[in-house]
Image 1: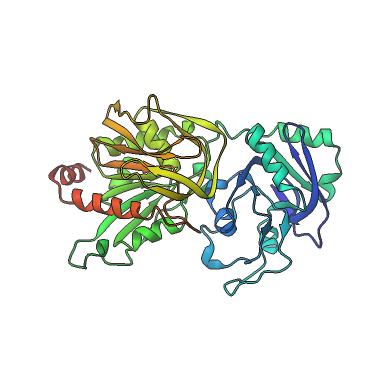
Image 2: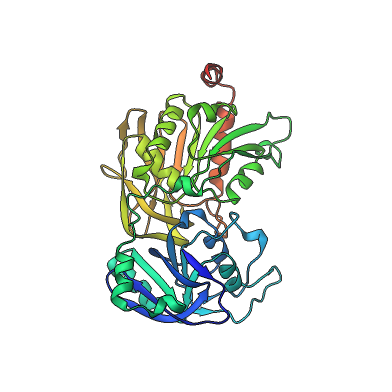
Length: 401
């Protein structure tokens, strides 16, 4: 991705790999960028979307027409940078208007070198992606937009597809760091011993360790290439796998690590990419969705309670369940069941192991910027950690490391 800060908005074009072209004006940096075109249905939370590492190498189309109204601020950053490859909006805000605003969205995009486009029909573009599926796309503005359509389409078609891409290491922390406990353990009083979690950063959002920290947990955030020895070195009561970009079929090292965690019976919780990796560790397969789930209004059924949660999503891959979703499947680590299901299309949205202390969900319970229907999952993980904290087999596993 290349770009420079624009003095004003110039002509821009958006070119899809199937030859569909949209024209508009530059938004953010001027230049060129290519990535996977995806759409997000959230009406709010655009800053959390932009700074979510799961969107690495993706060009995000916002379906809400007016973007930028609340500006940007340091408190809503989910990581240290904007990760999207490009940004597409219909009507950018003339100026930000919010008491928390510390800056203008378009200027923030330009400062981070993010090439975007505005003043185009995002509804038509979204409908096209719904019909044809997620695909490669390029945004070209300034001098880059002057090339012929055939040349721009060729450039888009030469870019790598998302399937087969191993991207977690590109967004993961390079060095381990600690997010210390910021509240009483489980909210039940300081007399309880403190908990420790090893969180594998596959593209983690800042709100996730923050929510664990509030439950009295020391969170050691580790690089994606960490080994089982690295994980056990922090003497964790549990292990967490985060969200992240790329194809789960490429994450062999992370899957091997998770299999060691399961074998040692260390409590495990995974979200999004972590859900897909739990599936692979159990011997299941994953597949590429036609256009994925993205936004903060996705309905999910909790099969254990019968409750419907409105949830935050960002995933283009899913678990390929080998049978009926109401039937358990046998794995080398015992039986596993589907715990949650997407109500829009029946996609598997959660797994629960019956013979290991392990579960995962496909969506984002940290829900920055919302909703918070699934926050209980962090309490469920905390209770699991408490239950297994002093078990003899857990202590024996620690002693062996």
